[in-house]
Image (cartoon, rainbow, N blue to C red):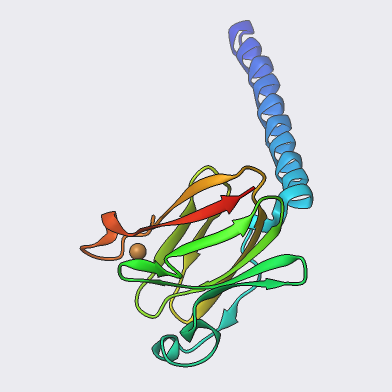
Length: 160
Ligand SMILES: [Cu+2]
């Protein structure tokens, strides 16, 4: 093997080590985020009969409730909108969303937050967050769901 080849191998080892160290650093940072602000990661899976979402159970009456010192929202994401169509909560209070779909897959993406979950018919998505800034937050569907997809929006109003 000539010198040139050895030099290349030496630098290559350096780069591989560097790349590996960066991957480990990223994994540690992801772990840190999970521990400190993991609320927006969907929790588990609970099953529901999608054909009965509109008529039976919690989701037939989509609403925002104050439970203790937090809010609980039962929401339907349907083609093409959300129920309740507007969510009002207070700043600095924990809000837990339970969301399901009576038809096809939808997205629940709250602009300017980390809330970005998939809403699957037959399953209930659960995410929690605390809104630290008052104002209006736009909700978008970011999973293609049919001809009305682009207009599938809603809003969350966070009051002082
Ligand atoms: Cu949709």
